[in-house]
Image 1 (tube, helix red, strand yellow):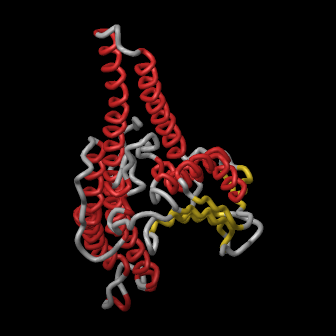
Image 2: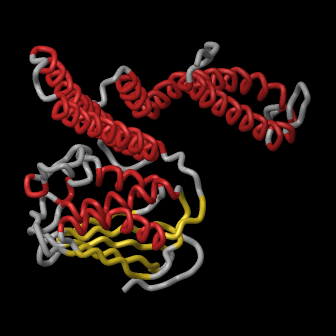
Length: 365
């Protein structure tokens, strides 16, 4: 924003200090005149021709008062300029850091020393903001790089398949079409996941009444064939869990959780348990599955986009694109909820989502 030039804050503070001292001096002179000089007789001879009169006192007092007033004015200007500079020095450092950040450098920190005051509190808040902003930018850069890599892979495979078909016209076309369709489907799934993640990250979701228990039942019904194919027992229990938000996004969130629990499970004989209910002022949905033990240091990274832990990577048709739990985390954040991931006591993963709600309270089992 372009602004008209004006007086600096330092100069305005200096003028304020000088003006305050000048007014204080003038008031002091007025008090001296009002309560002292006016009671002195005003005649040319003084009192009995011996005591000083008002005329002599005024002529003696006026030059000294004028000199004192001039001294106060100069002292106010010089001292005010110095004091204003000392007071505004922290603000100058904060401004310089803000301009550095505005030029794209987010690594600079103010780290203002000294005891706590308003300026140091502002500097600490600014440093915290820069740290969060730098972390967010780095995360977005990693996301863009990973998304580009993930999108480039199916496109490169498609180009290779087309080149092979062009060089070898006798090759089985049905096999080629089937492989191209699989690669294209994966690219479409990845694109849709990226769009959904971008939408939920913006936080502009519609607000409507949603019962998470009904959403969980719908997701389980959709994924039941996949569970049966893998020999996984899928169990949905619990009571109503009212929440406010986008039914589409919440359905995708629950679907991702259940699909993730089915895919990353035991080869056969595994279980997936989905429980819904309310706890206090929040609606809760908990998805727990069986599976191999997970390293505790791996669990916090599972919500990062394109993060695939070695112990959880799949190589079959349900390998996914590494955005399942990232989308869950983004949807939960857009609905002002919380997401907790903890390793199961005997293996697998326990995922708990808490969303704010108003209305029925029912304790989750």
